[in-house]
Each structure stands twice: as structure tokens, then as C-alpha cells.
Image 1 (cartoon, helix red, strand yellow):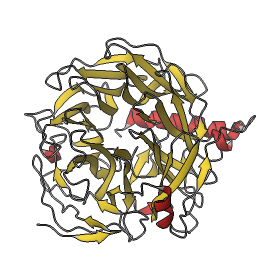
Image 2 (tube, rainbow, N blue to C red):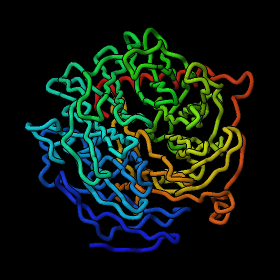
Image 3 (cartoon, rainbow, N blue to C red):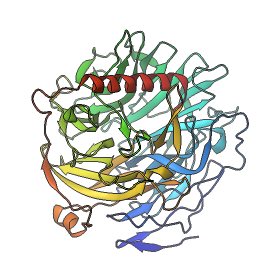
Length: 540
């Protein structure tokens, strides 16, 4: 059954909610995107219920009407074939009931819903690898021949608590994401370890190699763990540690990119709370033999995030503090973006970017790339198109001026040289108060949550962002949308709205001599300690 509408000249076909697992859901009419989008959008998710999925014995609040934290890839053999993955039914205590998988054969206009057995809600059981209560941190990649790999952090119970378990699972699709094989466990642990925050990356020129990486934490530390297939996913080599930062320290946000010449980089944050201080630092590891051996860590930059709060009330927002995003150009230039407050001396987070033109062996000084530095900006994603154009998406709070709400906008900035940028408004302001809340840290502070990351890729000459936003009304409700921003500055200007006129600007380095105050450094340290404690105590 199909229903159709038109938004901004683009035919809108949205998913009708399905349940269960394994095969696809029906397609039908859904609620179109909210009226505050500046570019054409298609709603990809519709909140799904899982009536056969028990919540007995699980702690926290289940937000059944929520979809969030998308991943998106384009099939290199068919640019009209898009595949997405996102969380469905978020729990306040971490993770979701399920990871949903969607596939489109018409460039994102219509979507077919499916599942892999990543949790009991979508077919996981004692007879397969997916016998877990919750799933989180979905990540997609696609090989040069179009084989799609989906990753899941799957877990039961609170991290490191008695009786808990976790694993990193990968499922494979050979038909463009419309059906999925049974998942394989890259690692499966009991209560002594928690396998957090994974990513998976296919070699862009060699079908045989696919790389997965995550952080494996225990009560005192957390290493970067790595698994690789050298035969296109038929078998995976045993997972192994590739970097251990030491006691009272852990890695987080590990992402692999493959450079020309088969140079493999792992980009990650290291959180160190040894002694009286607390630091977060971006590093790169380098391998030239498909991950068999790795260099020592190369520092990219310190991370000085103070996190995001509602400027009117101080309400907390779960953002991507100390979680980088990374992309590599066809020429081998690597770009990393992250949240950082050093450009405002600790007053608020902006979006920082650094790049490497020598295979990750040295890195440029960070520059600020969000268009309005007077507003808190958070959760950046970066992607470099085949023509070298850089795209960066993020949320900010520049329009958060109305009491009783947290008004949030989603933006994209683009650049051809990494210095001169053009801003495009995607959607907003929407009210973040309608987002699910997550317990954040050992004191169970709540934070409004859209995901640790959003998605950004490209199809030919066009960037394709995918983001989470809340829905109109007062209910806690969020959905995932694919966005179709204009491909030229002139087109962006023609679609301008009164509060979102495109602007051009130059990326800037921090002012000479600008340093964080003692109070700001305390906020940075407190944020790092909170992040590490939260990840050591609860699943994401």
C-alpha cells in the first residue's frame, strides 16, 4: 500500500510502522516532515512497536515513539540505492529496543523497512548471535561491489553489572539492504567487559577487506579493539586490541578510514582521568598492512568540549562530546571534526576541523567551521564528495530564545578548500524538549538525546544529510529524515527563509593567546569524567 504527497517538489513516500524481524515492512502513508524544513525532506522512520518484545526486568523509561541516530550509505554500483540504519524505541538507561534498517531504490524517495537479528525484538534468540535485550550505535558501510555491512552494539543489562552481556554484531546484505543474513558476533563478552561504540568500514577499492573497531572497557580502562575480514565477510579474524591507553583511561569513538595506497587509519578520542586531572585527546593510529600491525598514536588535537546546555535553563543535552567524525577525499586528505570550546575560551562548544595530507602522520591546526560562533553548536558530521567538496552538518541553538522550549536547528556548511564556507539551513527550529532523555553519568543526570551522531554522505554531486528531529506537539516523539539540500549557492539563496538566509564565512583558528579559564577547564574535566563514568556504568 502506498500513499504519496509532495514536499518542495519532491514526491514524499514514507514508511508505515512494522513490527517483528527479518523481512521488510509494508510501505504506506506516513506523517510528512514538519513545516519548518528549509529543504525537501523525506521521513524515513515511523516509530515501530514490538508487541512480542518483553520489557520485563529492564530498568529505565522506554520511549516507544522515538527513532534516532541514523547511519546512511550509497551503493557504489547503483547511486539510486540508499541504505539506512537507526535506533528504534530508545531507553533512558541506554540503547534501544531495536535497530531498524531501511533500503531505497529510488534515491531516497521511498523506503522499505527491514531488520537484522541484532536484538530479541527483531529476531535475536538463543539460536543465533542476537540474543540481547537492546541494540545501539548502528553503523553501515558498503563494499565496492555493493555488499552492505551493518554493525550493532547489542547488550543486555547495565554495563559491567552482574549478569550483563554485550557484543559487536555484523550482518551482511547482498541485495542492496533489502534483506539481511544472520548476524555474526565479532566479540561477545559477559559482565567483565563492555563492547561500546563501534564502527565498520569497507575498503573502497578491495571487496575482500572490511574493518570493524570499537572500545572494550572494564572497570579501570578501555582499549581499542579491532576485527577484520579478508574474504568479503565470509569469515572474520579474531578480535584483538590495537591500542591500550593505560589505567584510568579509555578510547571512544573509534572510526576507520582507508586512504589511497591501502593506508588504514583509526581515528579516536582518548579519555584520561588518571590523577587529579582529566583530558580528552584526538589521536590517529596508522596501519600499512591491513591492520596486522599499527603505529603508535599520533596526536591530532586536544579536545576541549564543555558540552551543550539550554542557555535559558541550563538543561543538559546529550551531544557528541569527544566523539569525532571523519572522512577522506579521493586524493587522500583526511578531515576530522569534533565539538570544541577553545574558540570561545570555554564559553560554548563550536565545531572544530583538522586535516592531514600525509596519511595521518601530521595534522593541521584546528579551525572553527560553524557559521554562527555566538551559538552553541553540537553533533557534527563530515563527508567529502568525490569532487573534493567538504560538507559538515551540525545542530545549533542560535534560535533558542523562547522560554519553555529548547529550539534547535540543523545546518550544513560546505567548502571547496577548507577555508571558505557557505551555510545552508536544513530544518528547524524544532523543540528538543520532545526528544527522549538519557541518564547521563553516575548521578543519573538527564540529557535530551538525538543520537551520538547523525549521517552525511553524497550521491553524485549532491550531499545527502540524514538527521533526527522531534515532531510537532507535546509528546516525546522523534523521527529520522533524509534531506535534499540545494547543490549550488544560488539555489540555496532562492530557498532562504527569513531566519535562515545563507551566509558565507571563513574558517578561523583560535585567537592568539586565547585560553580556557580555570572555571572552563574545570567544566571540561568534569565533562570528561562524567563521560567516562557513564560509559563504564551503563550501555550507550
